[in-house]
Structure formats: structure tokens, C-alpha cells
Amino acid sequence: MGLAVTLLLAGVILAIAALHLSWAFGSDWPTPRGELAIYVTPGTRRPGAAITIGVAAAIALAGLIVLAFRAPLTWPWNMASAAGYFGVMLVFLVRGMAGYFPALWRVSQGRPFYRLNRIYYSPLCLVIAGGLAANVLIR
Image (cartoon, rainbow, N blue to C red; front, side, top):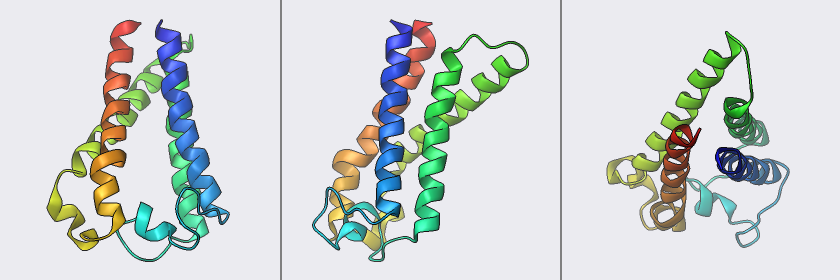
């Protein structure tokens, strides 16, 4: 059961990384053509490809860390894996909670991102963080 949960969580995280990578190379999916920025960022300008690739790489690394947590590693790699796993869980928890602090997103009020952040992005981060926490107990 624990392996299945790990693979599901890692798959979701890696899919998010792949979506960010597709945005870096010009895709606008799932938004209307040319309007990606107002749907996925609090600003009105699309971030540059280098920044988006960096974000995609960081998210992909998080997915690999989740996979490594379940792998049979020896010391000190098992401790590094556990520390990284905790860090990933903390980042998703903080990002999920941040979506519900209006002062952080004031600049995006009235844009699609503001609503989508509260309905989809932040809850998804909280679900991932909760899944990562539960995954520790499933061992």
C-alpha cells in the first residue's frame, strides 16, 4: 500500500513538473492562447523560460525525492532522503496555506489566478502535503 501511495504522489508531482516544462517551451494549455500568465501567476506577464524551467526542475526534484524516500537506501542516504522528504512536505504545506492569506495575493485580486489559486492550486498543494504526511505512517 505504501509503495502505491508513493508512486501516486510522485506521479502527481512529476506531472505538475511536466506541465511547467511545457509552459516553458510555449504551451498555453489549459488556458486560452496567450493568456497563461493571468491564469497561473499573480502577475500579468508570463515568466521567462529560464525561470519556468527552474521551477519545473525543482518540482521534478521534489517528485524524485518522494520516490527516494521509499527506496531501500543505506546510511547516510536514508537520512538525506528523509530530510528531503520532510522539506518537500513542508514546502507543499506552506504553499497550500499561503493561498488562503489574501494579503499575499492582493495584486492578483480580480484576475482568474486569484480564484483558481483558492479553488485548485492551494487545495492541491494541501492534499499533496497531507498525502506525504500519511505516506510516512503507511510505511
